[in-house]
Every structure is written in structure tokens, then in C-alpha cells.
Length: 183
Image (cartoon, rainbow, N blue to C red; front, side, top):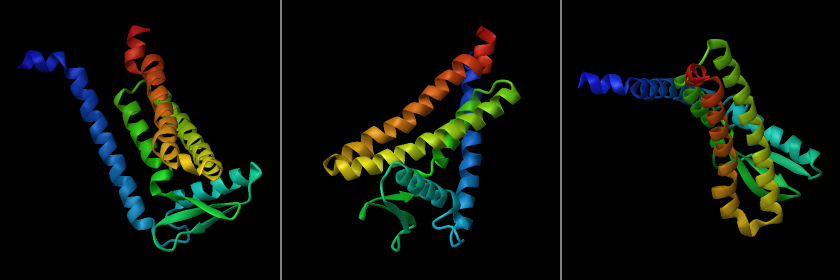
């Protein structure tokens, strides 16, 4: 049994580290969500920020957009050229994806400075790509409403999770301790 454990020690360490980091960050995020409601930023600061930045990007792209608080649920309505098309909910703010990304990178950590810089730069990239994803989804819903299901459930999750997967592959192959040992 001890030999078996030693054989899979790295795998067990990765899984435990991932689960602990993911659990702690998720707990902190849940704490933030519970105690950020009712502030001047509705539904919470980051979701509100993503909605406002979406509005700016849509306006920059030549559309007339408006962001309004949804009265019946904690979300922000996205109105494009006078048509209510989408809502920005807490799940759209990219923080849960950034938590997942961060947990994986820490579980496969490299040098501390490299790890921190990669988490920060990867987090910013995920956030920015997520903003453009929401903008493109809104424009897609405006021009091609018949493809709403495909756009929202397949294409746009593939963009954000595909990018996270690419960042993870880059991390493991270039910057993690595993890459440093084999490099």
C-alpha cells in the first residue's frame, strides 16, 4: 500500500492541493457574494462592472446599448438598439472561471514569482476574453436570434473554457515544476 501511495504521490498531491485551493477560493467568493448584495453596485460589484464594461464595448462597436438592473432577479439587463437581449448574471463575471484556473495553476505550481505572474496575467486574459465573449454573444443574439441556444450553450462556453484549457497546457508545459524538471 505504501509503495502504491509513493507511486501516485504527485497525483495525490495535485488533487489535494487543487481541492483545497479551489475550496478556499470558492468559500471566499461565496462570502463576497453573500455580503456584497445590497451595496450601491447591483447585483454585486464585479457583475455590475462586467455589465458596464460590456455596455462600453457595445457602444464602441457602434451599437446603442443600455444596461439596467433586472427588477426580478440579481442580474443586469443588456438592451441593444432598444431590444432586451441578454442578462449579465453572477456567473458571467468570470470570477468562478478565474478561481478554477488559479486552483489548477497553484496545484501545478512553479517558481513563486512565475506562478503569481501567470495567475495575474491569465486572470486578466480570462476577464478580457470573457468581456468580448459577452459582447459577441449579445451581438450574435441581436443579428441571429434563431441561434440563441447554440451560441449560449456551445459556442461561447467553448471560447472561455477553451482559452482556460490552452492556458493550463501552456502552464504545465512551460512554467510548472514538471516543465522545469523535464526542461
